Image 1 (cartoon, helix red, strand yellow):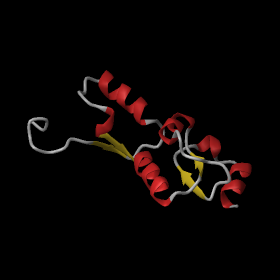
Image 2: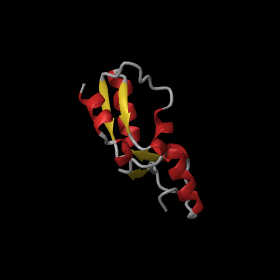
Image 3: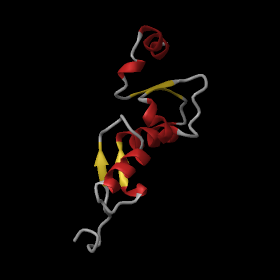
Image 4: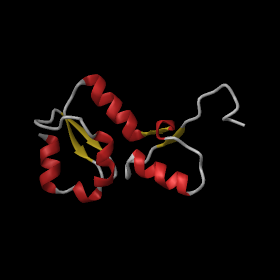
Length: 99
């Protein structure tokens, strides 16, 4: 019924553990008729903000989430993006983030 209605359909999630492409594969595997542009994640919001503010982030996100930041400059970071990535929360990385 939603597809037949005059409204945009979006699938929204706050996950930061996987890329939009991974979510798409999982949802289509479950039988959802969905396109990648219909998925909006917290990573999508973070990327949009990074582009709007024209900053270079240190990405403290799970490696599976990195594809959602392809093309975003990360040299000489002046911002930090934090996601669910316990493997990146160690002294050295936290020190970099605080600097």
